[in-house]
View 1 (spheres, helix red, strand yellow):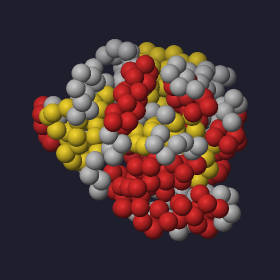
View 2 (cartoon, rainbow, N blue to C red; view 1 turned 120 degrees about the horizontal axis):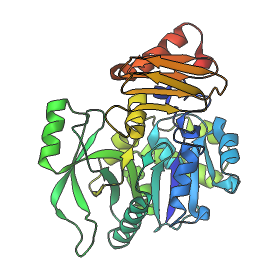
View 3 (cartoon, rainbow, N blue to C red; view 1 turned 60 degrees about the vertical axis):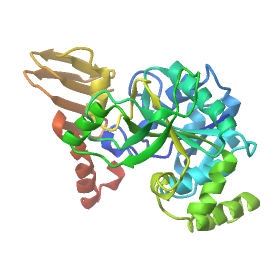
Length: 356
């Protein structure tokens, strides 16, 4: 099995720490290691670094080389421009040195996974399943722990496609858009819905066939890029369909399966999500970074700063996120952190795009 770690996202919902110039996958959100380094490290107990590739944008090449000095330079797949996930995944798939019948796992560089051994075991089960049923794409669906409205869902059938396995594989009945709270509560009670993590496993030849069937224009361009290697890749890639992989391939294909995965997963898509991952009790005041923080009578707050020369004091506040960087300060109620994207729009309108 080959593994492609998708590391081209911008992660601007974690502004001001995560920037387009250095997004969250290249930030140390939990300790000294960056999200990308943590992602690679959790795989090395079961997989070789020689089988791992990083797919990212041209502007992040040097960052990847710096963070992963033992990774071969030709294992960094560079997208010439952002064209959404279908072109990015297609380009990554043709860039991997894999047999046509070999499975490729597509993972994200910016996900937190508390149970890495379970993830690796699921990937191995998926590989074994595809050896017997190569026509499938297998998605990793996260076992929901709450009626979450921020994720897409996958509905799956009741009967497993495999027997005598400690992990079940189910046929996908439908992909469902982000629901309202009432609907999400119904999904949780139903027991046959999982969160769509965006991670999946598929054999190389099967993926190529699906592009030919559902995105034929992009498929032709990918074949041309593969044949001519570096020549005219920018011009050719610009002609691909700018569409997400879910819309372009996944939701159209007939043979989609899902493995419900209880792996302690979070996509860390906001400051509230990071706070939830770090919080250890009902009244936690969480401080991350090297600054000095002193608090009196506050509850449910997150303070994130790496300015070791600065003292941050908080008194009697609740449900607040405070994030400081060298050139910006964010103070937000925890219920409003999703509106960070509106701050990004304001910065752009004020000709401060370099701060986004």
